[in-house]
Image (cartoon, rainbow, N blue to C red; front, side):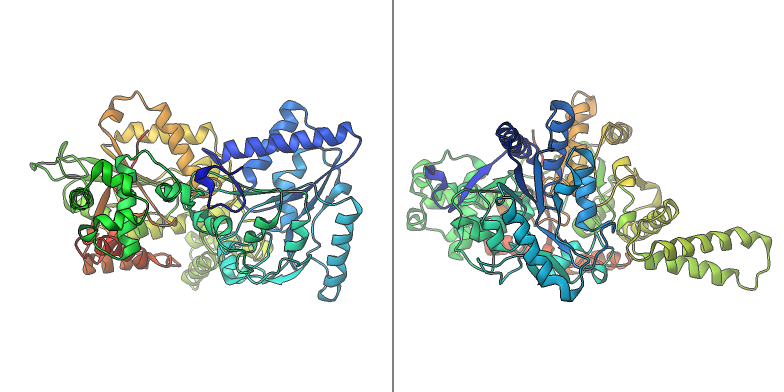
Length: 621
């Protein structure tokens, strides 16, 4: 039976505090299934997914195997999909992914592993897909199918337009899907255009289906799949028609469900300050009315009559929320010295402040907070930027080739012994590039140089924001230097490095991102390291006088009701920020639109109409 709060949800949905908790619950279910089947002398047949979402789930299965003796000898697996034309040992193939993330760490016999054959010829595809279906049927079907969900709502590689009855087949990858994979492949031009995937119909034949989703970037598409109409445009919506399907979400991925985003629409709520602001701004946007023009009947007709009873009439409530929103806007992100700060987001004292920006990767800083950095520097605060990782995984081979070629060109005709070592180094780099090809692993020398390239870009971009070189630092956390996208695992060494960094700076302000990210992404891993570091420094004296401001980098922007500090930018300031980004070999898209979008939030609510705004949410326990 659904609860009152879940009345809009058309498929079972469970929200957990974290992805780790959800993965523990699901892994326990899988372990129980495996053991029950073994007791009955039967196999457990699992359908498996790839991507960053299931990584913590696989790590929990590995832990159960190592620490609790869970055996996989009676398990048969079928993977959802594989890129067409990718060698099994390619570092982005799903064959390689599954080996790295699960198969090489448990006692699962190779003969019981099945992955769609990406290396068949085009003429062999249809037969290979039919054979894959036959193998599933031959073992009695899939007991439990694990899924993630893509930005387009796809499950497996069932892109928009996939029918409910579709079977295993070749599919052309959607542009958004290829863009999402571009970082892993070091450029969208390297992402395969085709893949083999189980069909929606194949998936729906599983006896039990569990779809996992983490982070706020998945929230909107999850809500559409769970609460919207069943449609071929969102293949995950077909799970509504399965009698034993369930969505497992962390708090971030649940944010757009009606019971979380608009709880007053599904039943009685306990109104607090944040929920009141959320409800009023939602009503203002829904009716396209400024906050100060909302009427009593507007509240009554949209499920908020009890709010009026507690806090009304509308006139008083509107003024209260309007003032709260207005007080979030400040041109003084470090606080305005010698001024009454009761209605400002930041305190006036101490002045000047030590402001510390923690940045997961280069390009997570200037696009999101370049204007605020510039404003703090201009207002006399000490600003330090610490890049937590080198960002070398995001640098293209072309940047290395360009550097080596210029070095060789400089040496031409010089004839000096002093140039022998640079020429040898350039030759080594070019040789490493040729040997690894477009898809091979970078050597240590390549990663080191790519890190230096990214450092130079970051320094130039921050220089345009007014930063001095002595205020730019690189922490190079170990998890990144030894890992790859979607395969990161942080540890105590990362926490200790960040602890030493915070102890050194003893900041009055910390700016950090990643709270809304997929926990397996670089920003997500860095945020978890940050959380662990905060626990270890909780009793330090400097912490009692330190405020933490969360910002969004590549994640979706903060909603108007979530913003505690809004730093406006003029047209010229936005132009200067975008100019700073030109120092990177590829500029992130949508930066100006994101900042303008936040400004439109305020404009639509009836506040000042700014060109752009950088937004922050105050962190609390």
